[in-house]
Length: 434
Ligand code: DLL
Image 1 (cartoon, rainbow, N blue to C red):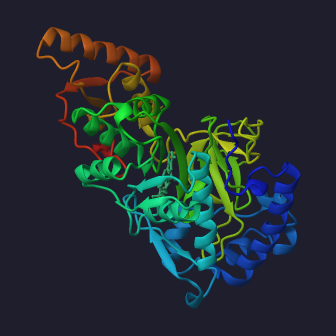
Image 2 (spheres, helix red, strand yellow):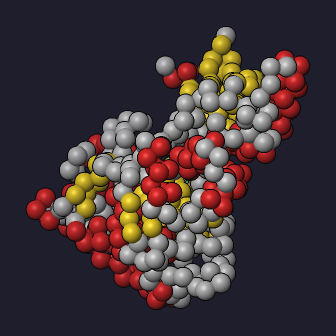
Image 3 (cartoon, rainbow, N blue to C red):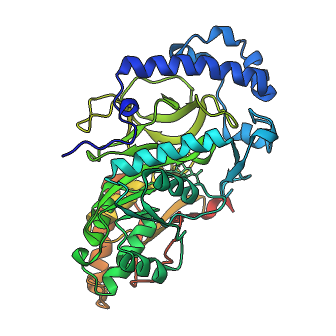
């Protein structure tokens, strides 16, 4: 296959070159933060470290972490690295788990962010011949603006539909012959389901690739989406605190996402002790932004759990790869003492032929945690034969027990009874917190 890169000299640079960029940019960034972010300077002083102690990437471990709690404490302006007059934009999270994160950008920050998104689009096969429909939310959420900017940089004809209004989405895909779709994987699955219902077969859908992220999704879900839409589905990762989508992205190998290491240094740590773990170990992902001016976070704890690998990639890119995050450490459910990631439950469901329309309800009854998984039957398997339903439920209970080591209650529900999501899907309802 022809090699496709947006910035080939950067994306295929040698390991030595990448390290040299990181060393130089980190030293500069630490000085920038020390001089301009009193909140972090104080944290460094408390940790007994000064900019002179940081000579390169190998000294990173000396720096204190930044956590979500710091963002909350310093809200809104306390972690800014540039005066307001130099900043041109904010983006923000939905704030479902506490106070909203507000991130700031200079024009330069936006430019580099859009480059990262452009790399993802080109890796998915995008060129200036493509029509790219951006169905991530626009506005405060970073998905729409990030991919929109990347799409412009690649020169795609960009359709800024934003999320929602599924009928209109499908109309544009068909009428304007969109070839690339950018949205959350759960929305892609919903669009696929709707098109199938309209009688559209994969070869009647003009799309060739999808760039899906912003939430965890399994390999099984990827296969489902690829089959219904007749596309290759690529993963993209990012978070508002570090600009948004495009911190890392998948190439044609589809075995993990290349982290844009000229902008971000990644580490994996033990979430309990903070100790840095060796390559290949599973742990919490920590990022240091080495080129960002307005919101220059050092050693930011993402809470996302994954692994890093430097194994050579057949696409020719040299930047380190992260595995699909298996969930966030704060999404991890502890049920009767057992750690459960929603992605494990999803894998069992999809392997049994269900679509990713489910809800996980956790409660505590008589001091014992309960796990109730409600799953939609697909139209093909829908039946009112109670014996058959019972049999299907039992099979899922057994498979969940072997995956999780825990017994769950499974309730099969009628097709279309679980609400579809247009953005990030809400899969878990934990009633214990209420
Ligand atoms: O979700 C940015 C984004 C937009 C990424 C569009 C990709 C595409 P936040 O709303 O700040 O930013 O949420 C960040 O979402 O820490 C992960 O837990 C999760 N996440 C993002 N991408 C992925 C992915 C955007 N590909 C949080 N796989 C992150 C799994 C993801 N989880």
